[in-house]
Length: 260
Image 1 (spheres, rainbow, N blue to C red):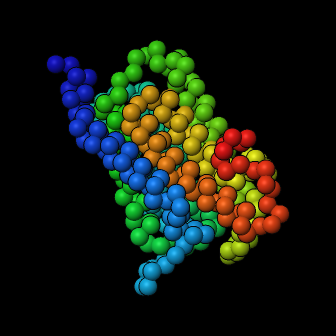
Image 2: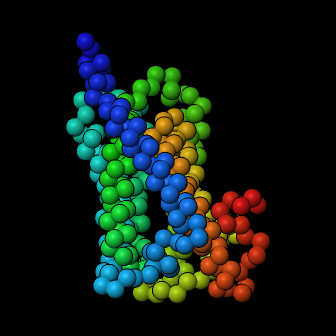
Image 3: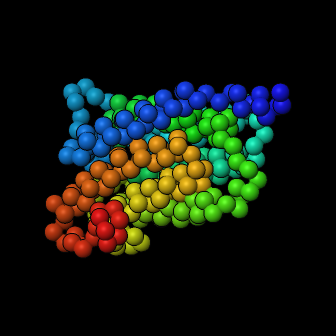
């Protein structure tokens, strides 16, 4: 038996499928749950008696960290030499979470998080970090021709375009506030001229680009989960702006320019 065949046996198919089903089910539940009532963090924070808050910088750092660290740990302990798998993993998924963990979290001026929200996000990022990392390193197989495959090229282009939109939109939102400020203002510039949630649009583009580039079911399940949460969040943001700002541009869509 070859070294490659031995490594392929490390793929935990049943566990991968279980986690994928969990993402599909929880994503659907979140969509139904948060369609009318938004998740209680940020501008929608609603504290229960005795509930503790965590500074936004701390919350974002710790809850996003597992999605960066877990795949790297899997990579360091893997005996399978897959240049393409490593590239896809480190060049897309981990790159996003490096930015969110070590750059976005330190620059954010968001409001404190309820600690239970942070803990839930930490658990999710740990599970998903394992799912994406394990699949790429131990389950996925790509021929050398995949490097020139249209799916890889298209997916990476979509991913990096989405990441650029996401980072630029976050910068616009961050600059609406002075350090220590909590007042919300109308975002202007970039894709915010067309949609209320340009940062969310960028993130959706990232994960569907990642899905196309890897052409994997776990990536698709993660993109689906993200959409279920992000779409409802975008709708609530759009409604918030319309209700709180009389001069808010009525022509702006929620998430997709000229469509939705």
